[in-house]
Image 1 (spheres, rainbow, N blue to C red):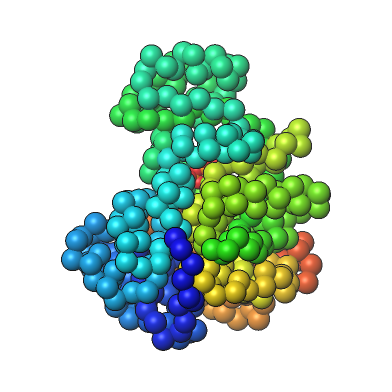
Image 2 (cartoon, protein in one colour):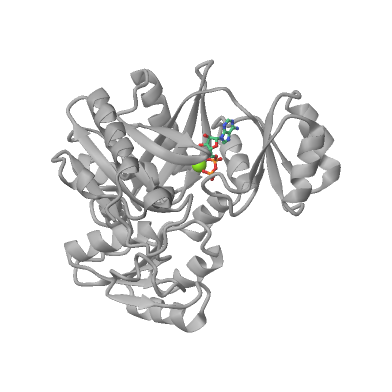
Length: 386
Ligand code: ADP
Ligand code: MG
């Protein structure tokens, strides 16, 4: 992309994908004075419902893409499974970030891990598997401990993964996944999981948020603690690695990098997301600039905002499971607490494992934020509004 003048408020931005990340970007962009168009085939998509325009069509719909190209000055995406050639096509006529090339690396675990290794960025030991005959060598290369088989594409929230304790189990899991390309990865002994969310501008400036500590339950992010309670030198190391990666990818936009800090003190990159990330939601309430504004700024080639933390925070995901027992949770449990901030995504149908919203608890001290947030989470699961 050659250097273009900034896209200023009053212009229209496009978002490919209408989930909660697109919704939060759309809301921020509207607030700053942009018009927003969202492309998503779901008539009830969370972002489509708040945007100025909702193009209700498949992501590769020719006329919708032509509309986006002609009516938007800049287009971004909010999920990594958008077909990369859609972004390529849009970039012929308007600013697009992140690039199709960056998104396609993040879409495929084999490409992603190979890219990381090639740039000297350490991952968990892994082998690519695309046919059954490769399983034995991959299994032995990992040393015979527990391993995780992950589909190369389309996995998220722990989906498309299988924990294997024997080579036979890998065989079975590979078959169960339909023999699609996979990575077999050593199950590492994790001390802490952290993520770094950063924004990189077209001219190579980087603004990095502090390391966030992530707690997963059944492979899905449960809550995020900020700042991460890790040795500051580890947090610095994670930031340095994330910035190095962003430069290596010549990345433009918001990038999230997930890390495993192992019991032996290694800092490994787990995966990357070419967009704002669930573990960066704390920035909405606890940082000078939120990750969605940062995405808008990077996309529109505006100066990046400050990533300074204003307070310690704990972000708790609100999963559809909460509705399971007694219906709509009693939101007053959260709304009456002055330090808690509620964010719901406007999804009509709660399902187990579906992200319906989140809340963020702010406190001066991170341990207090954690205690209070977990107490609210517990109280919410005990009280329903109906
Ligand atoms: P997803 O795309 O579903 O987020 P991840 O690869 O990030 O997939 O895996 C989800 C979670 O599963 C991780 O956050 C971590 O808790 C656990 N996990 C994944 N890979 C490993 C591994 N190699 N060793 C130990 N735990 C892992
Ligand atoms: Mg992950």
